[in-house]
Structures are given as C-alpha cells and as structure tokens.
Length: 196
Image (cartoon, rainbow, N blue to C red):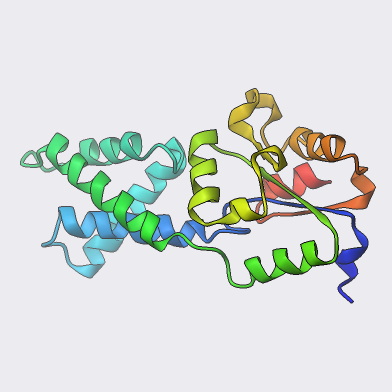
C-alpha cells in the first residue's frame, strides 16, 4: 500500500505538479516567436526565447500581453510593428498553449487512486483566479476539484499567497482535517515552505 494513503487529505499545487504548464507555455512562446519572426535561425530563436522567458518570469506567465509587449519594445529593430506583431504573437501563443496544456504523466491515475481509497483532495495554487480555474476546467481536473475544494491566491490578499501556509491551513480547516493528517504536493520552494 502507498504510505501516503495514511493521510486523510491530499492537497495539490496545480502548475507543474498536476499540469505540465512549463512545457505548454515554453513551447507556445517559442511557436509565437517563430511565427512572428520566421527568418530567425534556430540559434537566434533560442536567444529570443530566453529573453521572452526572462520577461515572462518578471511580469508573471499569466500576463502574456504585458511581457510580450515588453519583449517587442526591447527589440532593436525599428521595422517591427509592435501592435500587429503583438496581436499575432498573442494569438499564436494562446492557440498553442491551450492545445499543449495537459496533465503530468500519472497525475490523473494518482488522483483516481487516492479518491478510490476514500481520501479527500484539495487544490492550492498561486495565480490569477480566472486563469487557474480555466486551466482546471480545460484539463477536466474539475471532476476532482470542485470550486469549493480550490484555493487560489487570486481570491486572497497578497500576503496569503504561497509561501504563506494560509491556503493550506484554510483547506484543512474547511474540510475539517488537521494539518498533521494532510500531505501537500508541489514543485517549488514556495510549495515546500507553505507545506511545512
């Protein structure tokens, strides 16, 4: 038997824990650059992707228009029509991102196994509430995580965002299971800090 089944409540992060979000947005960013700048070599595309990824981390990966606009404004090419190129990149990015977004290998089977053993599950995630809920619905994770089992930082004030333990504690409290009877699955230092 899985030793984690001793826990009554299993709390999951969303991005790069249940969903392969990094793959989807990195591949979508690369596709957007290739569509907007088809004459770039593979090496030049890699350099531009690094610049775009750096900006996406600074602005937040959910702020696509903001970081793409900053990227285009940073180019030293006066011939770039920023607004038209931005519209193209955003459209290509969104189409590519949503077509690539999927669950991590084994995630659905694991959720099924946990729930078949009568364990409760909840989701705790940083991010914009509308965007995170769209990901949950699009990936059909809403079968496992109804709205009342999802705690998304966009619902709360900034100081309650991970690494604060607030959302994990709230999930435990709302479900009525103590923290020592729960386990948190995540993929980042913020997840580790909030889960301890």
